[in-house]
Amino acid sequence: MFQPPLKGMTTTNTKLIDRNNAYVSANAAAEAATEKALALLMSDYQSGSEARILSNLNTYASAVPTSTENSFWTNFQFSDAQGHTGKNYAARISVASNAVFTQLAEQYHPVAGNRGADRRGRPDEQPCRR
Image 1 (cartoon, helix red, strand yellow):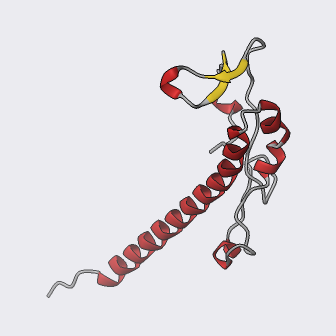
Image 2 (cartoon, helix red, strand yellow; image 1 turned 90 degrees about the horizontal axis):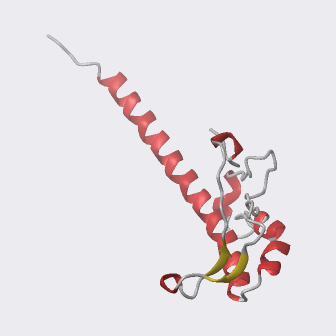
Image 3 (cartoon, one colour; image 1 turned 180 degrees about the horizontal axis):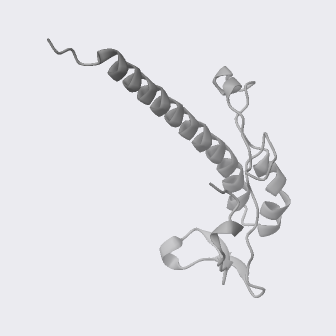
């Protein structure tokens, strides 16, 4: 009589489920860190001041969820992919020298930004690497 290898199948399924749960949790943590930094940036952005945004880049980079906010974050370590733990990545990308921080086209109203901003680079110049 043939018996399928149920123990091996169960172990494999358990490992896949655990891996999926870890991925979903890590994804949620990354999203929470992004949203925390973005909320601060958007507040500064509403004031319409590029100088204010640029002066607060370190604040945005430090905006990651902490265990004092919620114990859920105790098991997470955030990194900016530059070797700094407890940080998010926030930086100004290169901007054309003639770029002006102004209201963008009507279809993007009330969004302001740098006109003439352009980013072209190699993949190895990106802040996050695989």
